[in-house]
Image 1 (tube, rainbow, N blue to C red):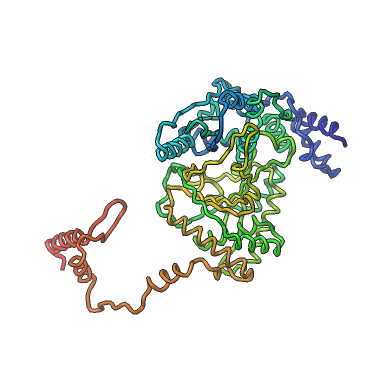
Image 2: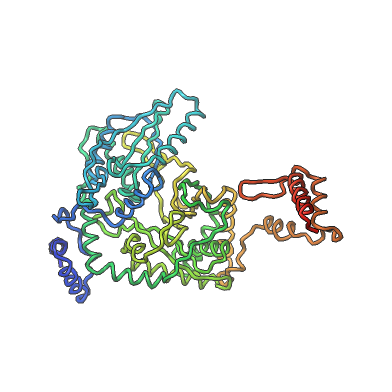
Amino acid sequence: MNAEDSLKLARRFIGLPLEKRQMFLAALHKEGVDFARFPIPQGVEAEDRQALSYAQQRMWFLWQLDPHSGAYNLPGAVRLTGQLNLPALEQAFASLVARHETLRTVFQRQADESLQQAPASAPLVIEQIDFSALPTLEREQAVAEAAQQQSLLPFDLAVGPLLRVKLLKLAEQEHVLLLTLHHIVSDGWSMNVLIDEFIRCYDAHDAGAQLQLAPLPIQYSDYALWQRRWLEAGEQARQLEYWQAQLGFEHPVLELPTDHPRPVMPNYRGTRYEFDVDGQLAEQLRATAQKHNITLFMLLLGAFNALLHRYTGQTDIRVGVPIANRNRGEIEGLIGFFVNTQVLRTRLDGQTRVADLLSDIKETALGAQAHQDLPFERLVEALKLERSLSHTPLFQVMYNHQPQVADISTVTTASGLELGVIEWKGRTTQFDLTLDTYEKAGTLHAALTYANDLFDAPTIERMARHWTHLLHGMVNDSQQRISDLPLLEAEEYQRIVHDWNRADEGFADDLCIHQLIDRQVAAQPDALAVTFAAKQLTYVELDSRANQLAHKLIELGVG
């Protein structure tokens, strides 16, 4: 079947009623034809043409729960060095908005209570702020604060626009471009598309030349319509059956030891801690992955699962893993919300050997890859999970690996404008903890993003070291048991196991507990003795309270 015939069949399929679509897919399946490989047709008329995709529906629901939160903002900051043509920059963004339907879309409730995409009425305005008069240190601080503020500022999904652009002037030939999109119209892949096309649009407008971008084969609404039609006709039920069997009926919350109690309502503030993986270790990891016939992603996930098990003692570990979901040529160049989330379940205990853990993870990952089209939102709905605002459903920890990340610091526009990424530690996060690993310019990098509600920085820095130690142990001997893998470095082991448990320290065994406290009152009266919630007592305060209570008991006749 040629491409033209496939496109006609796909267009016809979308227009069929549900029952006939089911028969259509069954007939194709009988002939061994995978409808998922059929092209997505453009501009098919349908009553639900403007309905949201499954992912967008869930994002709207989450926004309704907390419309003043920036938890689902996707921020970016790019440093521009060189002579900036401001009209060309404004025209470049106007071209992007005209090219991508999602950048001029909002989401509104209709009179019949249905939810639909609608054109944004508010135009994109590029806000400009001049920091050039500030001293250098104050200028960089002002940039960091502006980036943080911009990243947390909420969107109104019903009004838009859902792309914010702010230009900060630092000097005549130095600017910072702050970009923020809401997740309902974008994802990580989309941010790369936006930057790439912005450069090409800017160069064209700067040179006064014709814009050389191939027309987009479809828009996001075409994809959303095609996805709904395909999944409703039976594919959703097939993949859902797999995931229900995979995840079972119990969905335990991962109980990491935290520095602070879990709040009923999180504030979604997070911090990103970045660290590099030693070059020699990275090479050993690649060699170990090759030896076990697995990907680097599987090996790094295995170490992360081992870390989570060692921290929690739990034997049923569920980690969320995002997938780009860009496995079709028509959607590779679109800005939109395509990314899907899978839950990879690993069962392990202290006796599990590293090689067996890696084998299980490989099987789980390949099974997930073969069932990657079921939207996470449909899985959550089907499992009828009890809702909680304090943690995310199905998993609380995420792992994301990017095999190759472009180094934007090497990018220069045709006009000589140099680009550089600006990173800042502050983040929004929906999860307790996220591990990111990525390879850039041949180097393996890692970062832990954590919820400020739960963790303090020293805890996460220690966790990063522990994960690295586990990696060393896994490459040294894949027949080791998980419980035998080294977690602590030598100094930490000495301090915790030996220094804090000295057997040669003498204690008075002829004194009662109140006498020992009396000694402490005399030696350190102002030292902290007792804490409970927000209340604290020093030793002298504790002694005073205890004496008052004792006298009251004697007064009441207690002997």
